[in-house]
Image 1 (cartoon, rainbow, N blue to C red):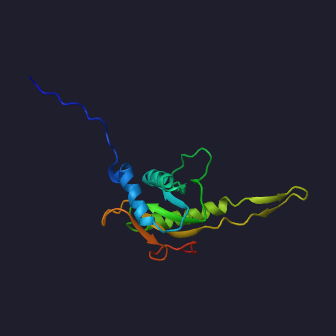
Image 2: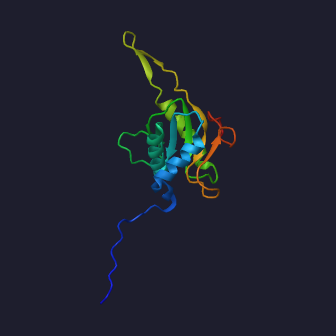
Image 3: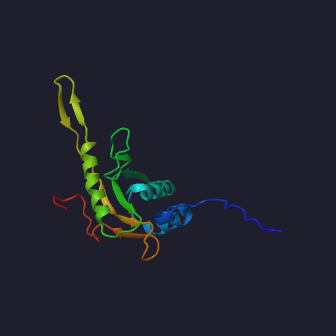
Length: 170
């Protein structure tokens, strides 16, 4: 009699962002590391960042804003971002290597805020006045999958080379 193996019940294809499949652990780590941090929005980019931001935002009662990567042109409306940006945000990433993703996201966020500014129209004269820019504060960054030092690390603004708003030449 030959033994037959049953097929697996699920196929997990998570590779480098497997942490987003471990949702309960990821949420609990975020609750611990972000306790006492005043913020209202997670800002993220890429597939793994989108997965983590939506899960953590829902679980922690926060907003999220997803920025498309610069080479992602698969949008129907041409927007480079979607979601809600509040007054105090945390950049959410799996881990930091060179810091280039953070710099790109902060640069891109500045552009999005400027593009979404809008105008107040005076319909009698046909003139328009730019609305004030949305003001938001970079609180810090949270690494939900910090590969080298365990999971979940929060770095307040000013403890990394990240600055907000972006300075010319940054």
